[in-house]
Image (cartoon, rainbow, N blue to C red; front, side, top):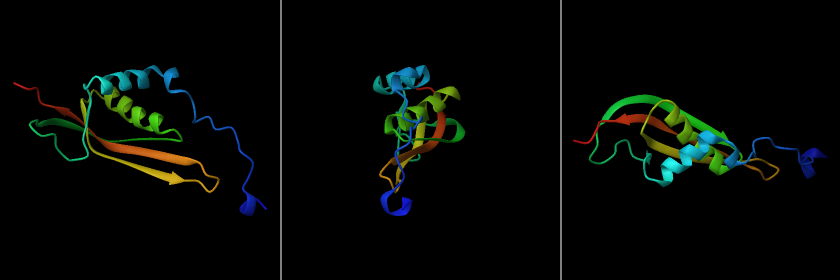
Length: 112
């Protein structure tokens, strides 16, 4: 019967409040202030990459948690931009959505 009607809804700890995590609040504030660049391309026009920290990934049932969690990871490694940004969404048979955000954390050269 579980295949036809689905199983009962369970408590999902991944749906925590964004405001409860200070790292993600800082990431959101930096993004809204324009201090953290996110590009879908492999470069940022007019800027050169100083160093790359590698691929960072964040997943959650809540899009804001996945997006700002990704930025919080970039801040943790002292990156000031994310290039090659992508996002995907997967659908659970019961109707839940699962978001994945990923990209490459980079440090840009200072503007002269």
